[in-house]
Length: 331
Image 1 (tube, rainbow, N blue to C red):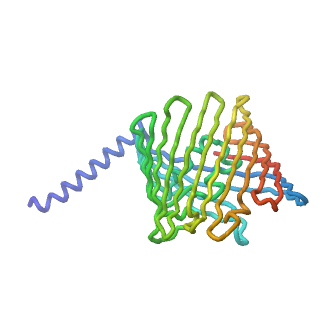
Image 2: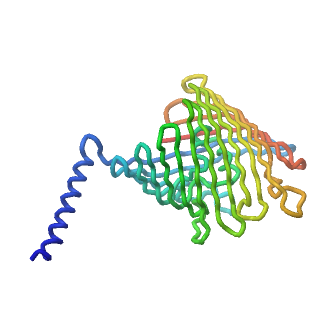
Image 3: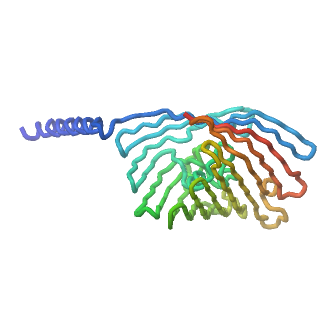
């Protein structure tokens, strides 16, 4: 008799437990909720390079997603990235940028699925103008901004945060099932208010291991922000001797409630492979000079007139000047 009633008692207990959990979740302390996520980057620009002139209207990114919180600590997010693929005849393609489950408390965050990578999230927040230009590692293809895998962030004290992730290594545009994985580790230290230091390392195990080492220092004081980052990668794309490195320096200051000015400098350089005289990335190496201002007429809209100058490391290539008007729309 006991053997027959035990499953019924156990099932009744689970139903009661689930009912109590649902009741607890709908208390004034927390009510499950969801919200749409829409973020659009668009711009108009004119580029002058020696005797060449071009102008264009672009929608560089459109993020369409949804975020749902099951409990105070458990949530999920799905996000589609619609953008110009940059290759082939397609004008726009859509990718799953994020699709993950997250457990988060004050000190701990665990994510699993198609997750944001941790290579430069700190730098991106300090830079603050992703809708105008990507951060260094993202712009020059050191690391993707999202990948399939799992990550853990833990902050044992307010001044320090540790992170570790295990990733597929292909990024969110190419989900390839193979035996090559990427392991990443990082530490962020805040020794005093407004100042931040971060060290990051990752490795992809292959015939030629791809490794990335990056350092970042950031400072914020009232309306002023500044960041300096250095990145070095060996065997980019797991190709022997495809090494490159560089620095990025940027700062901004809010001069009014809705108005800020910013400036940025990048310097990217690559090494020559064995038996070659020119660097492997010679046609893409160079220096970026950028300045402009950011204006937000209303919450959710940003407008940034700016100048971008690119000086190629290859002396046979001309200096390129770009005048752009960038927009961010968020709701």
